Each structure stands twice: as C-alpha cells, then as structure tokens.
Image 1: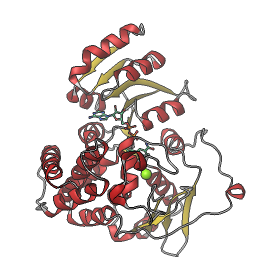
Image 2: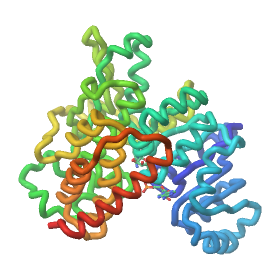
Image 3: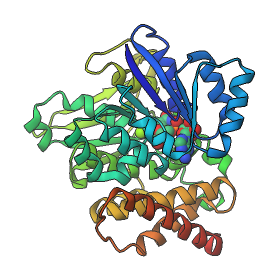
Image 4: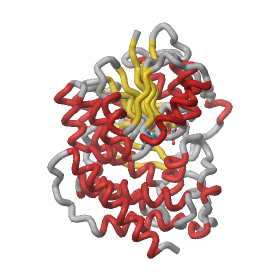
Length: 391
Ligand code: NAD
Ligand code: MG
C-alpha cells in the first residue's frame, strides 16, 4: 500500500484526486487529509476515507473541526492545525506520496517540506514552482524527490518528452496550449466591464475560483510558462503558447527534426492525476474518452498579448529571475482576491501586476524564508496600490 497525504483535499484537484484513488482501494491508502478552512467538507471526507490524520491550516478552526468530526462520529483520527502543522505533514516520512493541491503561494513552504523529505510529489500547486524556482528544483535533485506535474500542460509535455532521449529533450521546444478563457475569442467584450460572474464562467474546464480568474486574464498561462521553464529546465525563448479553444491537445513538444509530439484527451484533470499516481505505469482513467470523429475540428491561434498583458509579464518575470516571479505571483493573487471581492476591476489585476513588477529590484534571494517575506510584503503593497488606484 502506498501512503498518501493530500494537501488541499477539499478543493477541485483534491476531490478529483480522491475520485481517482477511490478506484484503487488496494493500492493507495489516504493517510492524511488537509484543507484551509472548509472544516465541514474536511470532516465529511474524513468520515468517508478514515485517514489517520486531518489538518486544517487555520489555527482558529481547530475546535470547529473537532466538533464537525464528533458530529459525524469520526473519533479515531489525529487532528492538527496551523501552517506549521501543514508543513510537518508535508514532510512526514510516513507518507510516500504527497498530492500538493493547495492554491496559491500558501503552498510554497509545504512544497519545500515535501521535496526536502525526498517524496514523490504530485504537484498541482504551480505557484510553488513559480516562487520556489531553481531553489526548489535544486532541492529535488539533492533529495531525490520526484516532482510529477499534475498541471495538464506540463503533464502532457512530460509524456511527450518520452518520445526522445535526454539529449533530444535538451534541444526540444515546448508548446503550451491555452483555451483563451471566456474572453480571448470575444474581442467585442470590453474587459473594463467584466464582472466576477462573467470571468468565472470558463468555457472548457471546471476549476477552483482563483485559477479560473487566472485563465480569464491569461495569467494562468503565464504562470505555466514559468512553471515549464523550471520543471523542464528550458529558457523561456523555447516555450511557446498557442491558443486552442477546445482544450483537447494538452500541450506539445517540437523536437530538433521538426517532429511535433502532442498529448490529447478530453479536458479532465482526472487523466493527468491518474498518470501521476500510476507513474511509471499507466492506470485506468475515468474521464470521458476522446472521439475525434465526433469532435470534427481543432482550432489554433496566437495569443493576444496586448489585450491580455499578464502573459507577457510572465515572460518578462521569468527572464528577470526568481524575485520578479514571486512579485508577479503575489501581485496577481492580491489582484484576483480584490476582483473577486469587488474591490477592483478585472483590468486592475494586470495593472497592479505591472506596478509591482516596475517597483521590483530583482535582487538575489538568500534563502527560502525570503520567498515568504517578499510574498507577504508585495501582497500588502498591492492591496494599498489597489485601494488607491482601482477603476
Ligand atoms: P481550489 O480553490 O478548488 O482548492 C484549493 C485547496 O487549497 C482547498 O482544499 C483549500 O482548502 C486549500 N487551501 C487554500 N488556501 C490554503 C492555505 N492558505 N493553506 C492550506 N491550504 C489552503 O483550487 P484548485 O482549483 O483545486 O487548485 C489547486 C492548485 O492546483 C492551484 O495551484 C491550481 O493552479 C492548480 N491547478 C488546478 C487545476 C484545476 O483544474 N482545478 C488545474 C491545473 C492546476
Ligand atoms: Mg494548466
């Protein structure tokens, strides 16, 4: 039995992962479940999965979690709370595998703990790769941790790279596909007037709220460019983005001979999750099968960087270095939160990212604790900027 800890178990990726795991009761044991604040759902999951430990990141929710568990008659479970507990859980040697499905930079320290402990990390939390950068990848090489990309594009590239040897991979160019979100194909929509409801209506993927907004601004693709740059050790010049509204081709690798290898499938995160869980073996997937004859056509196009400048900012940040990437990510998280709470407009998200990148000095980082310090400082500055400048 493989022991698994799921960080972010109550979210979109967390619950999809549990659905996949449910097909293999003799192979995987869900030993730990963690979440941020949804103690009701966490307790319900605990009553179904009977883990040994449940943890909630918010310290003030320890008692409410105990009460929820008691109400459901879940008694044989250890309970922990606080961000330190989450970090300890991520590095606990009892678990072979960590599914890192926390959203945002809150995932950075648990990711360092899991990678530091040399685990198999099924990495959905792209923000940890964006902020952790070379530090996280170097740590993985030192500890032997295996970071398996859950993000569908990176999962596709990981699969496509198997079509060549290591040398071929070094010379290959990566193509990330991008649905374009709800607005890219609709130039008639004035982005100044976009509401959270409009931006949350994603045409092809069902995901958490933060990543859905990131998909609408194309920041998600920007974060993915930086993610691919680190995961596959590629200069950003060798990472292209192609708009593909149907989200069927999940990404591609172009080898030196001009051969382009793509991975296709219906848009469901259960496919990359199953691939990572079973790796290096393929296990049975549960997503709807792809029928190209029924689908009929696939479309491709170029991203509009003028209307969606955050994608260009991500290329810029990747070239500038780790600090710029952390700053861009933090400004974006502050912008998205403000937009969802109607404290800022849709276009203010890009504007605050631009303002914070302009103020960033690109100094080198000394340690992992600098990541959290820069993240916290920029979030605060971004909030102040938005309070003064939002439209
Ligand atoms: P979500 O909002 O649905 O769930 C987020 C999870 O993280 C929840 O379980 C929540 O409890 C937990 N969480 C939030 N803040 C936390 C904190 N401060 N400390 C600890 N836990 C915290 O998000 P999601 O859509 O499942 O996305 C999770 C991650 O996976 C993101 O990084 C996202 O970019 C990435 N991802 C998601 C999808 C998708 O289809 N949903 C696809 C690719 C990548
Ligand atoms: Mg993705």
